[in-house]
Length: 161
Image 1 (spheres, rainbow, N blue to C red):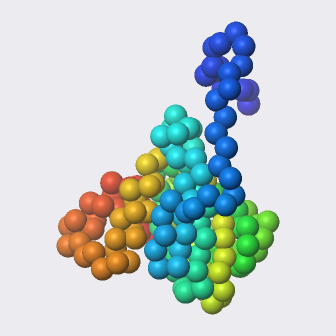
Image 2 (image 1 turned 45 degrees about the vertical axis):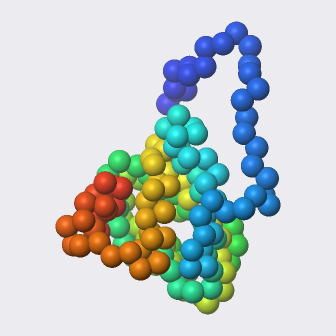
């Protein structure tokens, strides 16, 4: 395997880094969850999307599903997150990592009754922000018809396993 072709062609480097302090408020909060948009697909030129997902103590998280267009990786920061690897639910603890290639069945849940936190990495970077924000609307009582719900999940590359 070799390095990809250059994406920057300047003669000297440039000051273009983006710093996000750890105490910055979450970009989205609902139902005890706090989601930080650390690096969106838009801000990385489509290279990746990185999000910090802080669970509240209530049980939450999606069941088994897969994506056709992107990989998804999970890195547990705090607490315990139940991670589904396509065959088994595993107890993910701080430092545990799960990578799921496109088409890989996966899921995640907080079921311990205690807060937990993890990083979610999508590659390439997809516009997950609208997906997360619509999930918050569902939690607040928004209801879609069966056809509208199916279109929503397909538009966001989510397929039930």
